[in-house]
Length: 570
Image (cartoon, rainbow, N blue to C red):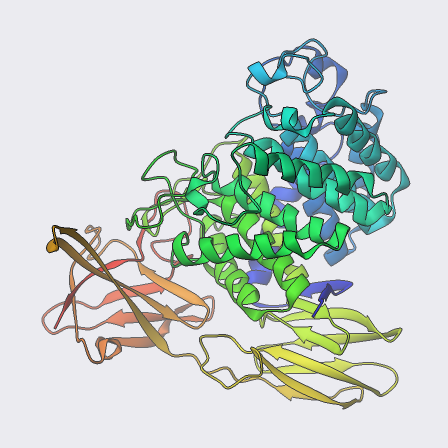
């Protein structure tokens, strides 16, 4: 079943509302204010004339446009609308006659138009992919004709420059993965313009991947074996396959994306819902699927692109496993990467590890802020039967069903329907997987004639859950190494502890094999952000306090937190 995002969703209460608003004020409104901002001036004639080293900083402009367009959809802030217009006008004014809209000098060897660009370190196609995303967002949100024409000119340049799509894959980094990300913005360009040539070129890129050592459609490898295994790029390419399926109406692309999603979900996620790696090989790539470490790292960019993949697969299939994965990542991996100040982000987060705020130009600061704004797209969707409520954070959303505007307000305890004329339609509420309530394909569904002011009571009981993991190593059939771990969760949150007794990073906890939850207790008196703490209780020692991962140890640079706890089973 196809799901279409609501016209507008505004978070009204709770930690997501607070964090999104904080990010909006402290990141989106300050990092780029207008065309004079540093990240936009990279595209000026003056800056471009001296740029010959192949950096990727131009991506920030595209990410900001995507996030800012969504933020305007949410806030209707006229000042933000003006900033978006000024940035668009400037960027479009810097586009060259052949369609080039990057940050590299005309004679730079790393520029995508250079004949020997495949020999240079280049992020030029990557930058154009993000600029395309931003232009597409402006066209989608505002019907911006100049943005549409600029996007088409970029698409035309790429088609003309890379007559053989295999040449495109030779440009950039990570065995072609960093260039193949162009698949999604090209497919989106076809969806929005109805011009099939952009999706046809994207499909040719996919075929070239298949023929040149990147079997994205064959579905025979593990994600760590695809090119360099770069998690951010792979998730974005898979999102491109979903968009290409829409643009071409060919389900083979959707089925391939679903295969890789399942592979990543089963073998390459932390308990917090972030794609993890960084221990086995390069810091930003998936580890082999059998590898485990409590210190495995997740790049915030990878979390944001994974969430986008989950969302788009959900929109095209209606399968709640995708919504559940999105929900997990939002409340844990993404929320756990942003500082309480709303401006700073971690480049990498660790189930067990230290918070480290990243540097000014880091990609993850823009990806994280964009991911927070994209979360509203998942909250409320329209189907052929009615309305689907997919996240139960408090929000107010507006949809149109059979041409009638309908407002849905969700609080912690109920759903309220507002409409002018009584109407028959379905309200489907996703039943969270942690609630253990019965459901119909993951939803509680009510079809009736809805009247203005009708309500639905909400009650999703939450219980403490202990998830164990045993890590062992055998040699000739003999177990030679064994470590037992577990992590705690309550409702949508995975819990972690800070430094134990104020200084210890780890301690082995004794847990009963039959009823391990009995060693822990909820504590409302120590609640933060309305979310209870969990205490580990043992005689002759002070309780150990566990909090949701995003809170544990403190929401600031250098805080320590541990999700995986060492366990001695009793």
